Length: 334
Image 1 (cartoon, rainbow, N blue to C red):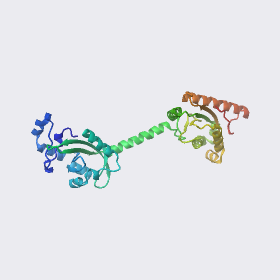
Image 2: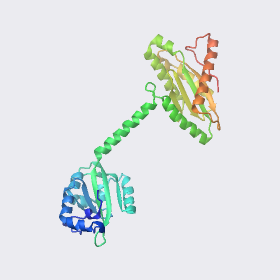
Image 3: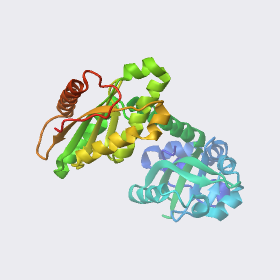
Image 4: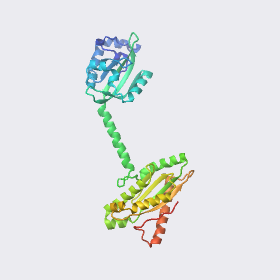
């Protein structure tokens, strides 16, 4: 890091005169002498580039040549334009900030002599020669490995976050995901003055399915229901598995719940689902609508849809004599 213009002096071999030090350190800077600055420049483990503000490079120390895998002459010939990755938008922001403030620190991509792009952390300072000519001193360090590790850490963190909000078996949201994204949907509906439909769906006779065909088929039944719900609702809707055999869907502006229910019933009764599970499977459904201006919370809506679903199940059991196992279900609109 360049902390003082005296430390940013060009090496004597460059033909440039040393920048004037600030009054507070004039005596100490003179006492150190040019040889000390040359030693610092030549043996610094970080790359040092002296440039004009327009990007023309005047000198590069050995570390900069090693980082960029180029000779000093090649670096000077390429200049900032030839070394900077033109697709990296961070460059323009860094240069603009340095023009405003006289110094800048940041990371951007540079191209090495072998053509490989590297992430370079840099600190750049604008100073003036004794004749008033503006110069810049830029310290560079290859941080590609560190940036790569940070990107991998973010990727893993994002993956863990997704896993923490998704049901591992069905790949739809779990209860945590429902609460997070369902609340966002309700907030969006409030801003848009749009109605929200809430579906509570319970897979029928899961115990019988597990006892008859085994837990593998039971898992396939849950996966089939999740797949049907995901396909019959829009990508912007929120589909979640909230219990062992219970699913909740939040849909904004999807008022035709009867048509959606018919599609779900037909899809589950189709051969694709039967082949996947090993037998026909059904769900009992309960719908609740939250009209514009309604302030009911997500928990309130889920609880009400759950009650509607249970009333539908009880009515169906009375009709079917207690067997709510494999037939198509009917639901009570809410």
